Amino acid sequence: MRTARGRTRTRTMTVAAGLAAAAALAGGCGAKNTAWEAAPPPAGAGASGDASALAALVADGDAAWQHRTDEAQIRAAIAKYEEAVAKGADWHAYEKLSHAYYFLADGTLRFQPEKKEEFLATFEKGLTVAAHGMLAASAEFAAKVLKAGEKPEDNLTLLPTDAIGLMYWYATNLGKWAVEKGFTTVLGRKDEIKKYSERVLSIDEKWFFGAAHRYFGSFYAKAPAFAGGDMEKSKEHFDKAIEIGPNYVATYVLIAEFYMTKQGDREGFEKYLKHVLDTPDDVLPDYVAETKVEKRKAKALMDKIDELF
Image (cartoon, rainbow, N blue to C red; front, side):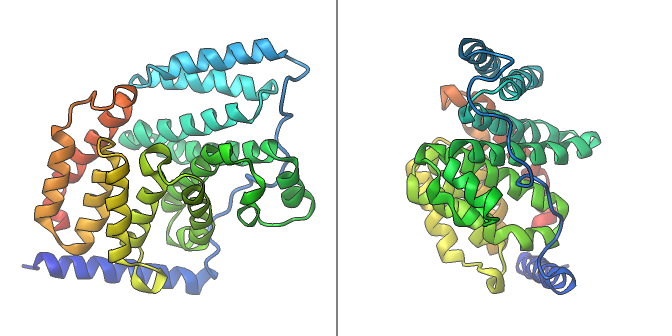
């Protein structure tokens, strides 16, 4: 019978071997998407709708979003945001739509294995919409990307700082999409995702309950040492995320899933997941849906404890 430490070592070696093989086979390229290959729809009031009509569509989307514990309401919000974007809403609507796509995929479709294809496609929609939103948010940024052919991630300082959500939801959708596409894609896109997360961190480390710190806590724990893994840095970022948003339970789920499994710490794994499961759904009244999703993730991880340790 293998010990917990032995199983952890085996998992780490398997991940490292997979990443190394991916790099050798494809130079770290992996699957691609076409998010940046076309200009976005026009920003601002379009020919098919005036500013007040567009604002009404976004408001209808916002109203549905408030009830996102219900999958039908998430989809209703998406439909309204999609219509607003198609008719010429400004880049703020793109951010809302990208976020909504992410939540549909990560909060609902991930628990429906029969919808695997839609799950992956929804992340791709989310990153594409965020890319188009960034292009719409800054003419100078768009010129660098579409005309000069420069990498978007090398020109993020050209975006307004209040486009932080577009940067974050692009990176988050891209990260989840890359994981589903496999090691080759993860390896090929990790530096790109890291640049977005670094920009989010530099703009506002407290944004969305320390979102960038959650990313780096996960990144440094997941990655093998040769790819930048560092458990001390992981702990520092996770600790900071908890300090910033102690009631945002996604942080505790990530600590259990990535940090504690990497450390082979079953007791810590159980402690963090139990904390999540014992947390009231309304600990953050505006984020009941998110808390419920994280509790479902925690339950799923707890059910796998004997496989993980």
